[in-house]
Image (cartoon, each protein chain N blue to C red):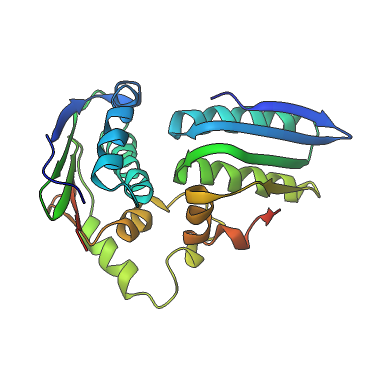
Length: 140
Length: 100
């Protein structure tokens, strides 16, 4: 990872508004993680899509995104204004299962977002309500 | 990104370009469902110039494949490479699609 960078701290409503920010987010991740930004970018977009589509139910709720890099860590937070869900419990269930999480949903049309997010980061945790997720990736 | 579509000998050839985000995945779904509704059942999807896809695009491919298999057809994915190919491998979708 490169040195400390000016963080991204934005809020938006809906996919159209987020689309105007995506290239800035991509650039940040490419600079922060030049050799392995892709899966992190995918995971970040998964979290934002979930926040807009499932969290705020596509309505005018605000999504807040922060992307911050310290010397040794990349930290991302995505927060929505929705009702929340039992996120940490679902994540625990995924980890407890013997079957590979992607094999389990091989022919499903949805449901890959959470396991992709989990695969991309060293640490992923939701707040109790399930309206905010924090990801962390450490410098090796 | 609007998919380029050509029909050759009854096979729908789809050329995708750039980044397939959730909104472009919706466009892709609409275009491919239209071909299925017209009676087409075989698709070849070219990923040569795709630099990004996420679960929304992957979900569209699964849904189109289900419909085409029901009609006796299938999807072939070609020129998968780099980060996009790695995502297919991570999500085990290399087991689901014919990849050439």
